[in-house]
Length: 320
Length: 118
Length: 163
Image (cartoon, rainbow over all chains, first blue to last red; front, side, top):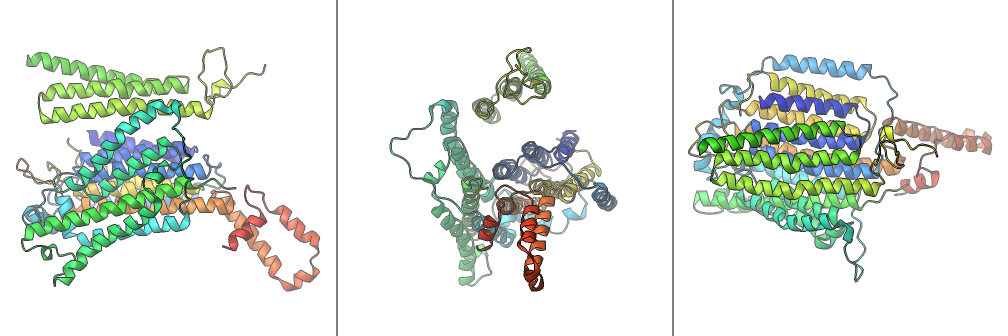
């Protein structure tokens, strides 16, 4: 039942986002859409995915889109061209896709092809071979560790691309005797109290990913969000005095190096790339060590890339 | 005793649900931005803790209800701050509250609040 | 927490996909196109996670109290996809910011018209036969016909091209 309600609201939000011309409202609707999708993922038993979607989609993407709106324009121009052809194309594609879903197995079918082959092996052998109760972390960091290495490199490359496109402007040095603005007392106090807990929670999520929902991606995004919150509330570029941009480029590279380094270490010890049994004579502790190191690498890279992208967007002054 | 707890949690759910609905209605029907922020704030500050209290009463003394207590503390700390931040941002942006139905204040962006010529 | 069995999830995911697709191809504002793309991505995630759901299953975290688990593999793939999606969206938004600074607008039609006007001017200035016969009045008229955009003036354009 809650499934239908969530899906209904998703449809309403998407339709509203199409029709509105105030882009600020569209971005907010996108945030709501992301959050509803995260709720839907929880209902569909995907706790890690819900966590990541809420942190990344409803958090970081919304902030970046708002930062872009600040640098461009808020309202969409009135549409001038005819809408019939796109509607026809969309309707045809939708019809073909719906026809394709008619063959699909029903939702929840335990005999569906997607539940056969590899998945039962992961579920039955995951705890024995990898040693982490969270099967998603086991698959992400161990069974499919090579894919995750590629993903970390993609995140690093995206950070590189944004830095090349926008660059980070240095903030002016702190003038002596400057005090924070006193009419924002409520925000300052609450945020000052919250940020240590946010950072602590990020650290907890980083290392708890073996046993519950969590892992490097969520942790990196949460810690970056804490610093983004600090920057948003305390003024332009305050966070850059805490974590300078020069650190971020090095940390992003360090994360990828850590991940790749673990793989190379396995190669140097005579095993396959990212074979964690090369890290320790006891197989399970090798897995634990390997997973901890690669998740740490992922977390560091994601944190520094997200923060660097935020610095790039927030430091850009509207030109022209 | 358990009937009392069930009754109390039921009343918490009903009250919380009612406040959520009225908050939603207020969000749509109030004439002014600041009234709408207040409606949204009521939803998050009173309705959510009431619903959480109802669930905690059902769960009794357990680790889950302790976690829910922490969630409620977090919600109580952050959601009113968010409403405050919204209202403050609107004030900084130049929006002024509509003080009186007959008193049309300049600077408001609502359609029915066009400034009247002196 | 039960879900409605059947194909309802997939149909809604297809509808959301088409909504995002429509925004990308039919609407002119670049930022809105990126929002539509993000909507499209999220609907694909919903489709995949729905495929992985097992009725009566629990989240794939091993514990003694649970016997049936939902499929962890689609969740892993979508976890990767979410992070890659935000990375590419960030690059797209950075490109939009640069486009705004170069053209003065993020509306697709205006950018197209500006590019066409520039291409016409380039054609006129490159043709050597016309250079000699063209009097300054023509060049002045061409400049006046170029639509005025904030921050978009010939000096800024040539400065940008010199980058």
